[in-house]
Length: 240
Image 1: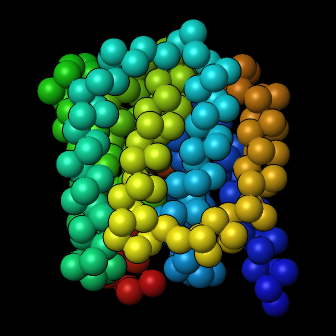
Image 2: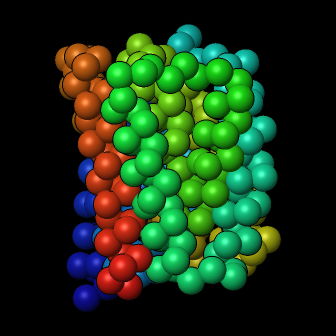
């Protein structure tokens, strides 16, 4: 039974890593809902750990497309957002938190679908970073706010900047989760069997990523964000 659980968890991580490598985010959106059903221990710390490894590799590979200066406001916003996300884990029910996060994601998707094109200004990056912190630390799903704001960037720049952002912020979330008691040696132990699957997903995605047109990357990103929001609301309403 234990082996089948680990195998299923590794399969979800493989799929999530493939998506994250291909478009810059998505590991948690793909993997977190079902991983939580397998065991609540898988969310959020183990997913943050795998995301850190994959993001570190992606950021290094795409380092020429990374603009740390452009991410500064988002990183600053992520700090209070991560603190709030960690606090919410201790005081808010999972259902309430899921409903709230899902609603925020769907509102963001609706705004992004409007003809008006949002530019990633420093103030907007600050807000996106804050929302990413709340969502990423409380549920491991921190990609949608940043991805929605940066969706019109060139594909390599989008993937590179998101990866660099997630390297910094995954570490930030893990530190905060540790102090709130949600990141222990047990979480590291259950993450280790998942890392080979994550690396395999990364390797396979790199074989096909250059063939994805920019328009397809944007549509896929929006669909993932939409799926994330709907799933979160469903889980909040049903309690699953």
